Every structure is written in structure tokens, then in C-alpha cells.
Image (cartoon, rainbow over all chains, first blue to last red; front, top):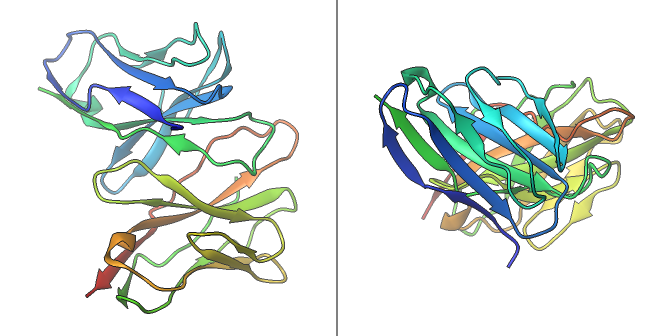
Amino acid sequence: EAQVTQNPRYLITVTGKKLTVTCSQNMNHEYMSWYRQDPGLGLRQIYYSMNVEVTDKGDVPEGYKVSRKEKRNFPLILESPSPNQTSLYFCASTTTVRDPYTEAFFGQGTRLTVV
Amino acid sequence: DAKTTQPNSMESNEEEPVHLPCNHSTISGTDYIHWYRQLPSQGPEYVIHGLTSNVNNRMASLAIAEDRKSSTLILHRATLRDAAVYYCILRSFARGATNKLIFGTGTLLAVQP
């Protein structure tokens, strides 16, 4: 079954404690991205990756890092989380940036609370 | 990036058709029209997309105006499972375009039994 898997689904952490949210897809997709969803602001893109070792900032990259060492994995790293990063996070993947008619697949989400 | 405008909310009765409108008056010739929906406590999921012609799939139909400045997502028989936020999104195939999906606030569809 085609899917994007995020872990963990829920996480409560303290300010400043580094954390990683993992994302894995089984569809051999080139393009992966991270979004955060906040009430009243909708979904906003944090970072994206067009392929292995190719990453770039989205609209709200401050306070986040990503890496793309393998095609299937695209972890989101918060080096020093702060309360304003409390949010619902989604990972997404799609075949390639050159095909805007293909669908994007989203993970189930990670609800992060930073206290 | 071209923007879309949708009503904040709509209501429907179960088993009846639902027409969800979207305005995209600044759409360019290189923009595809995509629809996604987000069920409660889940990630967005793809519904349908089109360029110029009307489209049908197992989930819904997409009617695109002749000038492409608006479109309508049609759910032929709404079920309780269709209660969700529906997003109308434009994706460009112009040179240099990214795959970023720009989500607006969408339309919250409530389905009454």
C-alpha cells in the first residue's frame, strides 16, 4: 500500500531539547516536503527536497532543519524547540517536481507540543 | 502564485449532491486545478485535478469554467464520511515551478444525516 509514514504521532517536549520527526515513503517519490498546520493560518510549507541531497527552504523554515540522505526518508529536525513550534506537522511526497498533475500523498501528522 | 477563493463553510444533507465552488481569477495557462480534502485528525488527501476539461473519478467530478477562472467540485451523493475541509489549489507546470501546494483556508463541509 502506498503510504507516507510519520513518527511519532504525538510528542510533548520541553524547550531546547532537540528532537527529530521521521518521515518515510514507499513510493520511490523524488519530491518530499514538510508542512505545519496552525489554526487560522492553514498549512504552510517548511522545507522541501527535490531529490536525494537536494533540499530548500519553504515559507517558514526558521528553527527547522532537514536532511535527505536516502530517497525514502526525509526527517525534520528541531535543534532547539520553542513553544511557537507547537503545531501539527505533515510530511508529503509526490513523484517529481516536473509533474504538477500527479497527486501528493500526506502522512497522518505529528502533533507536537513544546512546553 | 495564483490564489484561490472558497466559501468558509457549506452544509449538505446526506445522499444529496454537493457543489463546492472555487474562484481563481488570476489563474495562468500553466496552472492545474487540484482539489484536496482533509478529514478530521488526518492529513490532506488528493481528490481530483484538471486543466481545462471536466473530469470524473471515483471520488468526485470537477467542472471547470470555460475561461478557467472558476471551478466546482461535485460530490454526487454526500455521505457522513465526506465531512471535511476541502481545498482548491493551483499547481503550475511552468519552468522553474516547484511542487509547493499553497493551501488556503478551504471550505468546511458539514453533512447532516
